[in-house]
Figure (cartoon, one colour):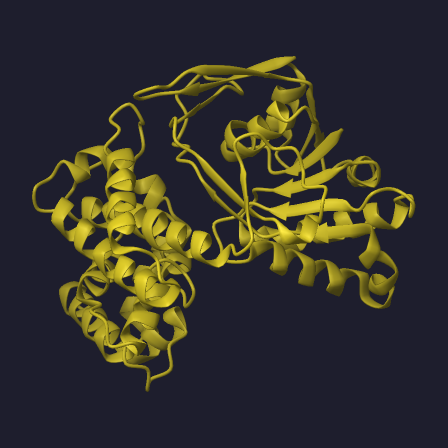
Length: 384
């Protein structure tokens, strides 16, 4: 069995690639970063180091890497004979991946089992997005290719921090992970991925993860950065920050209970599990890494505006989520291009224009005036 994975970074090697390896797949990483591709091809194994309680080391073998920028035909050939294709590149990069997969499907033996495609991104229904991008790429030829692939959405969760200097292609991760995958698209032949679990309805798993893990992680980062704290673990150890993060997650849990019928007690236990993971001092995770790309994180269907908008529509509390957005607006990191753009936009645009442009909210939405208020507060602070 063979799996082609787009994105040879830390998530690719330390989570998705690891589990595919444990499922017995030959691993082909595809990436555009030439030094990373060369480093992977220079070794015959790498180690995934779990740090924290219960952590252990796992050695990964049976892999190679291809530079898809320099050798796209090689990637296409691998896809043509693969069993599984996965991605961990970020939702905005899927448009560059789609043409390669389409080309691979075009070369695939029509008698071969359908290629099993899963986009493992921090986004809702990312595989659906990838399929739409593939359809656009294929144009009129799409109909002839549809029988050669099956698509399943996934929800993935594992904290993979910035890596220690000199680690090579080894990866440091937390012990906890979750990979939920839609079962129905695969029929009687799901992929072999030890540790993943297959579910009939993925929506509750995706939103529970995004609106708890991603919302909580980002809220911790922005409150921490605002307080001048460098690490996620140290931020949650702050007596002023921890309750604010917890309050934001209580609001997202209230939405999840109302929307999906999830048990409030189970959600409370899940929240505590997530917060305990963030407190793992063995993970050298910084507020600057987690907080990067604030404009994306403030967008309509992301971790703050997404749940807050739905909560506001239901008349549920959103004050703690809006407070986290206020902290996001103060995120000022000269090394992050989106942070630089965020601060520039705050200075150049009036509050309503900024809110509409960044959040995608209609001015009549019940959340809109609440966001405008915190934008105005930030603008007053910086003289915008």
